[in-house]
Amino acid sequence: MLLHEPLRQGLTRLKIEFSPQQVEQSLAFVTLLQKWNRAYNLTAVRDVGQMLVQHVLDSLSILPYLWGTRLLDVGAGAGLPGIPLAIARQDIQVILLDSNGKKTRFMQQAVLELALDNVEVVQSRLEEYRPEQPFDTVTSRAFSSLGAFVRMSAPLCGRGGRLLAMKGKNPEQELQGVDLSEFVSIIQHLHVPGLNAERHVICLNKNISEKV
Image (cartoon, rainbow, N blue to C red):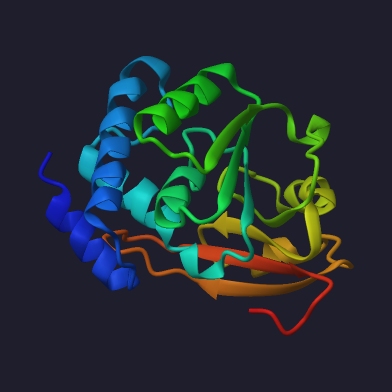
């Protein structure tokens, strides 16, 4: 795959520095995703170049908004955004949570082949998941309902922690009617290199207002 240069350009535009190993892990993840996608239908994106843009670079666009050292990726699916973030931040612990057996098997294989010692894959429904300790950041790309994500993820987010909900178009209207009594909400516009579509992230800071 001739993806080294597009990845390098994307990382430069995102102001992210990767070691040669992190570059190879990212490209190996795209290769693995393409291979498994033929049988498991993990993503509607078939082109490897678009996988790089729509999955890897899109996931990395929220890197500046991570908080703390424990990250939970809810409804991780094919490991997005959790695996690209785990590659970028190998100093933090990442839990990939999904209830779908096919998807968790793919994520387990990816974690094994990419040698991501900071990642654990858990097969469970979100409402049934009971971790031993809360998380600093809880994120998701997969939840269609922001209200459900906030309601079910809030108990897993520690005091002063953060929920990150990745969205397409400006989600300001979607925030209306969501119970945000525990949070201060900030909408950030994301610039994903090579992606001709709107992307936003809703940062919900728990019990603290000055953190952005």
